[in-house]
Length: 266
Image (cartoon, rainbow, N blue to C red; front, side, top):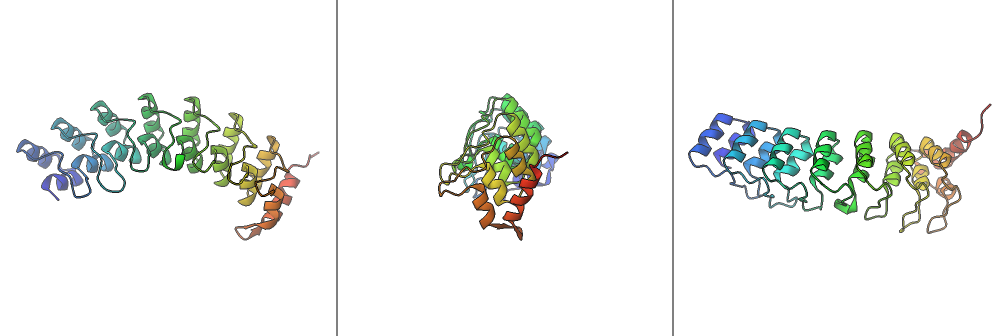
């Protein structure tokens, strides 16, 4: 490790400025390809990022390890908006992907950084681009329960019924993760309540019942979920409920609770 990288990690601006003025290479990298700019972007050291860029640090360089991340990916991961903007203004590509096909938008969404998501969308990143395992930002917002980001993505034109590499939509993802508010929002935006994944033929209702989520199952049924929709093996949600136990409680009990919740009240 060089003195410059040490100084970047410790946020010592004076030492960094002195080293750079005396010819230190701003793009020196470790055996894993980590540069001082990667470190400063990850740790949120705005001033260090500025100095490094002024002295020719490359904002587009990717690490050589398994992840292949750029400084922009690092800033997006941590939600360092000021650094993200400065990197973009110095030529960092908002569209670059890491080794797993994720862009900075995927990283910002996965970690709940709304402001960074907005900035990246403003810079023209595709809202529907599939990343790791084909998941779009909408899938990641659904998985993480980030309602504010989900609304932003949908308002920017995200395809509500986009499926990932396993055939899951954001609705099925939200049902599986037991994200009631996310499920409700997706349904209000036109999510297909009866969409079935090609592999197993299961719907979001199957997912909700499997997880023992009575509230989400009732919400789906109230929005038109077909109660007798069979999966690829001919299993309806009732079959699933009768044969699986979740969190120590019978899913059949869950199903009975759902049925009671659907009964009219005086």
